[in-house]
Amino acid sequence: MKQKALMALSALALLSFQTAPKKTASASAVNKSNAATPAKTTAGNAAVMERGKTVYLTQCLACHQVDGGGVPHLNAPLDGATAVTGKDKAKLITIVIKGLKGVELDGEFYSNAMAPHPEMTDQQIADVLTYIRNSWSNKASAVTAAEVKAVRAKIK
Amino acid sequence: MKNNFLLSLSLLAVFSACAQQPGDNPGVYSPEKSAVPKPAGLVADADNAGLKLPAGFGAIKVADGIGRARHIVVTQQGDIYVKLMRAVDGKGVLKLHDNNGDGKSDATTGFGNYGGTGIAIKNGYLYASSDEEVFRYKLDAKGDVIAPLQPEKIISGLINRRQHESKSIALDNNGNIYVNIGAYSNSCQERDRQTGSMGMKPCPILDSAGGIWQFKADKLNQTYGDGVRYATGLRNVVGLDWNSQANQLFVMQHGRDDLHNIFPALYTEQENADLPAETMYALKKGDNAGWPYIYYDPFKNKKIQSPEYGGDGKKEGSSEYVDPVVAFPAHMAPNGLLFYTGNMFPAKYKNGAFIAFHGSWNRAPLPQEGYYVAFVPFENGKPSGKWEVFANGFAGIEVVTGTRGAQHRPCGLAQGPDGSLYVSDDVKGTIYRIIYTGK
Image 1 (cartoon, rainbow over the protein chains, first blue to last red):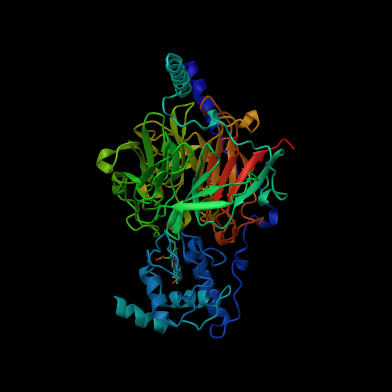
Image 2 (cartoon, chains in turn cyan, green):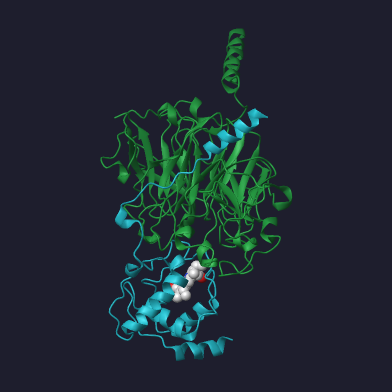
């Protein structure tokens, strides 16, 4: 009986959890305000970019990462992606509303699925798409709430 | 004539003595016991191939740019077989050979037009897996594949829905092969990874995935019906190895993601980055590790009920689920596990576990972690001390904020006949060989 308790104790001790090695203090958290530096945009203004960034941080960043680089073989990059800065805005709007899975993008496949975001408002989708089209190295025209509304009506 | 006959008799006797050493499992492929190419001429690269290692260790960049190198295995002759995640020019299995003994591969051949992760050598066969099947190839005395275009199909029809698709493999000393079949889901929600979506009860994925299946290593054309669900409740295992001391299968589970994104009211971003633990289990047949109903909290040292199944971050999970033997920080993605049985490294490493952490992505917006090879000392088949970072520097940058920034990500591990430790990287396709020089 006593033996058993001792054994359980030592098992617990073995199961000691250690935290990962410390990194430099300055790097301990990514300052959200530096998460992505908006490039100068031709179309979107600063307010739209700020709103878009807020949406990006809460809805997209976990998968597409701080630098828009995605995760190799898992989540597609948005920075430098042909479709993201392309002319076909309806395609981007549809991806956000309906999600995407198992599609070849710029010659690569990704293991994760992108969840649909139908609950996002037209304005939020317009803002976040304008944001990803004009962040990191991307530069392209803005997306408007009216454009999102039109596409949403068609795919419903 | 008579003399000749006697001679051949005694020759026969010598032969059979060699083949059947006492205590040797008949027919078991045992690299250590044979003549091994001398590592005498081996010199570590001046920069240790970019790695940071404990004192006395050095590293050689064996190969570079070979494709997405997943798991690896080294033959008794020191040749390296690499399983590529995607075939390159129709070759999904590469063989790296070193002609001049400097530790660098200078002759690459390949075969097997399929991508995948698993590779292993047992009883004179090379086993390799796609994301749906396991094949094997007979090896000759030199460790070469005899018929690269005619593999035997051991297992087929395993589920592949892209997420957690790797079919990693390990073999025991009793003729069995263990295959990881990862869950095609994060936490078995009705709608995968969507905010607030609850868990399916019972989780239907567990019938065909989310566990380790056991098959016969030498039987052809097996599928689910021929196998045994050896252990369940494991979300995704990429690194696994048979521990011959404990005579037990050890696995590294990739813990669940997105606690904050799915339940923002229950978990902060910091908690999302720190929970749950990446866990090592010592499995017995029939074990259930509890995914998706629980996760392991490394701070409380407890199983916690998943929020998809009524948990609130505090409620403890059922005791019917097995506890891990080691808990590591969250999201570091353990992709390789190897028990070290070689003689090159100092005694502390003997029989201990090396773990290749691929590196995290689900800690965002906090900095990512992992991207190193860790070590856990073992005694008598049980962990006997704290884990430590063994080889670091793969990422090539101090702090990884976005996963794409990591230049190399450790994935597979293998032990050479001389006791060298090999590490693969599936970003740039680099193969590292870590040696101990004592200097």
